[in-house]
Image (cartoon, rainbow, N blue to C red; front, side, top):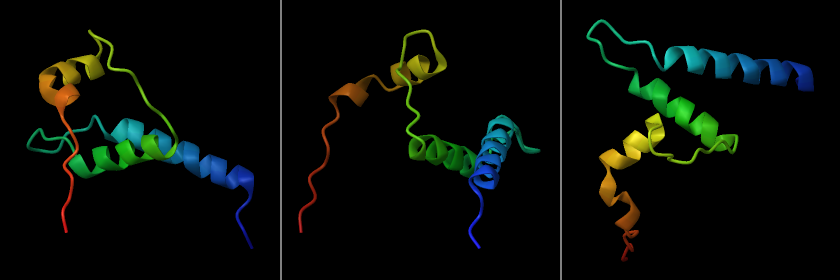
Length: 79
């Protein structure tokens, strides 16, 4: 028997809540959980969530930390 739409929506909401709470928690050494951050990144990507890197926002600051990012060309793989 397949899961109902309501139960899947509930699971989706719970996952989003756990990820939102978990990505800011640090371990005993003060480090963030890179695996959890990666899961959150993929969750956003899978759900079509994107943001613009507006100056002064956290994403804007991250972009400014990598000023070369606009000039990067994809590497063509050779066989």
